[in-house]
Length: 277
Image (cartoon, rainbow, N blue to C red; front, side, top):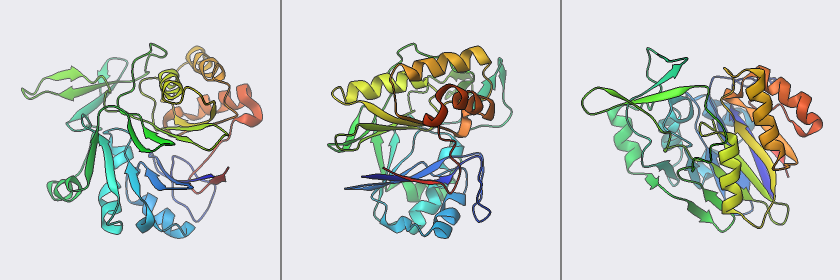
């Protein structure tokens, strides 16, 4: 059994639920309750309250990478949940800027925790580098290898100790993969900065004897042209998933194109939506 609910997402169709540029997914399996990302604010918590989801029961909080729209809710999560570890990549810290078409953004996009919040969170942190198995059926990927499947439409830069910038290789990005019995594997990828092709290739390596059933992912295609969108769609098709949930930074144009390409296999999900398999 696997259930998941979008607590934070860019859009919503539920008047009781708030939306934001962020992502947070509450996941239940037969053995664990997991929070995958915590959005850009406390909205994930407000929506959970409205949906009757008790975050005090979460067993593990997995943060996909060190950007604010996936991590700003972590301090609130630590306030309401006293038992869960926070699983982040060891390279997720530092000041980071995005850049589009060679122009670096004026505002940083990395973690925005205060010193007080960092002190509270640090006591709960579990650092990943390589794959970390929470259970024989649940793995946090750690660093995603670069399989050369996709060039990101946005570059990121990190501030070095001397104040200069260096390109962020996004080694701190990770995904969550869950095997749902004999059905196969559900892949949760927040932004897929390394490319969804690399994500799926690595998921297949981690579960070599299982098929990929569903791809629940932001794909950072909101700046992509149609050729790149269709290239990514074809890459996903090569893994023959039964379902695809393009969310968050995928962008509406890409989501509409995926709907054309995948038909009923493509689910346009929004904050407040729940799914059970």
